[in-house]
Length: 133
Image (tube, rainbow, N blue to C red; front, side):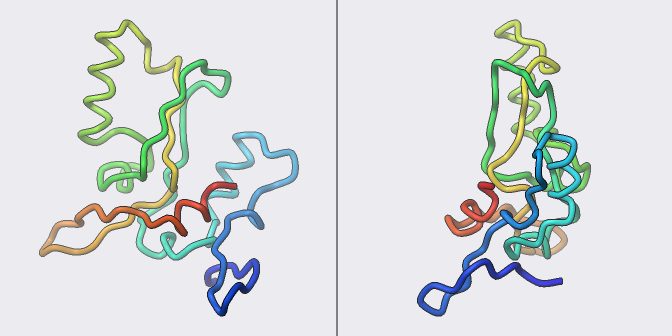
């Protein structure tokens, strides 16, 4: 299954996750839909989709750029170094992490190989826009 072509504009395909958004898009349905999303090429490099987690009714929402290597391998957001820093900051602020919602602008890890390591590569505006729906 390839990248969804939603429209053609100036001979450049438009990437979008919109066709994967279910009717009545509650978080449970969105998580299932995101797992099968091929709306941009990032699904090819990520080990798995990393969906957000936490309280759907949370008053605090943290949105990162993208999952990192640890998040990609574990399938959970904010579990790597940035997540550990977030946990420390939340603790110091007296905020229970279970009472917030954490997610990323894109749901797959974009990386490039460097020996045996996978180095973070910033998602481009098209990839971010594709994940917006």
